[in-house]
Amino acid sequence: LRDPQGLAEAVLRRLKTPKSIPYRIKLLMMNFVTRLVGNHELLLLNLYPFLQNYMGGHQREVTAILAYTVQACHESVPPDEVYGILKTIAHNFVTERCSEEQMAVGINAIRAIISRVPPVLSLEESRD
Image (cartoon, rainbow, N blue to C red; front, side):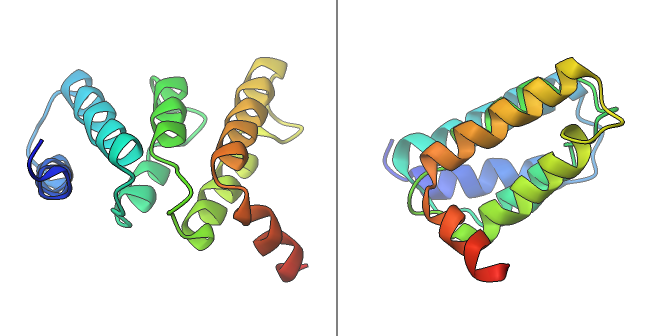
């Protein structure tokens, strides 16, 4: 690719438009953008809050969205962005009101994100 940053921004912009894009196509577009971000280590900071919107426990294909979030994380992402994602996952998946399967998915997603962005742990310590 000649301009992965520009392509990722264009696809995300299209993904955010309120046009009626079928949900399956949105998932494919999310997968594409997050792979671009992860493989090319791009900084696309408005991607992470966008993904957080789809992290409800009731959301369809939420495990795929969590996987997309993990693949979009890399060492260059600011820990503040990742911290918000971790809080959302913990709030929606790692609580006593969730089933064992939901908790396992949430814990595995948190583990995978932290392994990709270790500086987020020092951010957590400084906030305590």
